[in-house]
Amino acid sequence: MCNDDEYKVLTGAWIDALGTIISAIAEIRALAGMNEINNKLVAIGEGLQAVGSFVIAIAPEENSYAFTGNLIDGAGASTSSLAAYLQDVEGENSDNLRLEILGDTFQSIGASIAATGDYIIGEQLFAVGYSIQAFGAGLEAIGGVYELKNKEEKAQILSTLGAISQAIGSNFVAILLTDEFIASNTCPYKETWRG
Image (cartoon, rainbow, N blue to C red; front, side, top):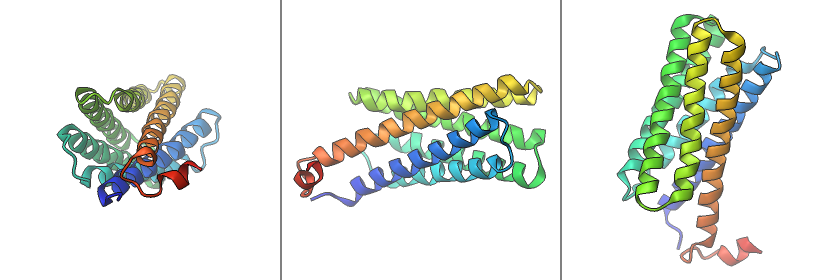
């Protein structure tokens, strides 16, 4: 029988994946010059990423890297969500931008730790997914630094590429987890799900 921890990890992964898609849509809109609701979308997207990472972190695993990585990733996404909310309410300023850079940096560190843990235990595909997420969050942090230096065009390109990379990595991990979940010999519904 499938246990609650497997459901938690799978649910958290898809909540995170949905959040990255919403954030990527916001960054693509910003690149296209449509700015009216982007901070709201980023706040929602990053908030979902935080919830997803925390849900994964509370599922007990033998891999302590996964717990630590997801906890740091969740803290980073929470920080980025708060920064986007403050930018929407107060307008863009350097303090809120620094908060966003800090959040993206934590997300990159957290995903890197999770990738390291998966690599150590031989889960190379999961390590690739988390590495892509880490790379994307890192690009977003670098984009924030460029924005702080008033290099808006370069900043937006980096932030958009970073958000898209995060979405690719996160959705790749969610798909891998779903496949693993369905293929599991302990799941009574596997034959039904496979059709």
